[in-house]
Length: 401
Image (spheres, rainbow, N blue to C red):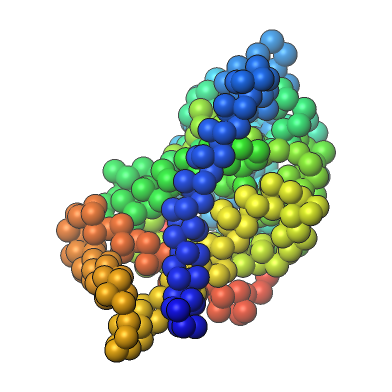
């Protein structure tokens, strides 16, 4: 086997492991762990707390919402807040609206139960979080976005998870409303988040979820630490910093946030590029978490679930095709390389045709899979260039359906 062949199989393994292999390995490890615990009749409270906790002494909670020019969703979000199944005297609602110059603040002033924090200068979401957290006095704080709606039982379900003292952060489940908009946006993103939610559930059953989504997550207030104002993925950075303090991130699928998909793939592209850039930024700023000698299984999960997706794997994916062509044109190449080339060609052609159908608003879930997969990985590459020119903590929001 020559150097090109070795490189080909290394790259193929990286891509397979990142998107499929880690999920399989994770499932096997969880089954082994569950069998071991069953054999020794050992309880695993931190993985069961979210379902079996008690509600006899409910703590005070702050529902923390950062918003910039969200006048269109204020009333809907407040209706959602008032529908939460939690004692009203123990639920404090805080909005931080720094820089907003529409009618967001005017609308919020109509709600007497809202603590409104506002300064005219817009520095971005992370700066708003840093400033607003100085006013939070409750032991737990739940972060949620203005344009997402959480289920009525979400707060109670999250509180259950904190019954175990080792849980420092609780990640709710993100769900994408696939009926709010059509095409590859909702279909691709919805399927992606279903798989991502399963991985998070398995991660937590093994040890800890790897990060939280800003649509819905909670922390113990004393564990909050200020982040640089140019942080792009504040939810991910904050939750992983807590995990690095020997706390676990619980995953609670009975507390979920529902949001619409982006209006179109152009808007989704902006969001994916920013997330990818934030992922690369996080890999650099959390570089100490790459040390398995210090962080053990958390490092293994972090690298397998996040680092590879945001760094090595997209490059490996797009190198496979030209490398495969080189192996096929070599006169002594094995027929297996021709088979791999056929499979790759079919996948890329499926992605291109899926893009064409999406532009024509023709629904085809099967072809949306390769299209959205390639779309995500291309935007990881673009995220690198976005990060190089990014300055400050503000960005252009993607429009939601």
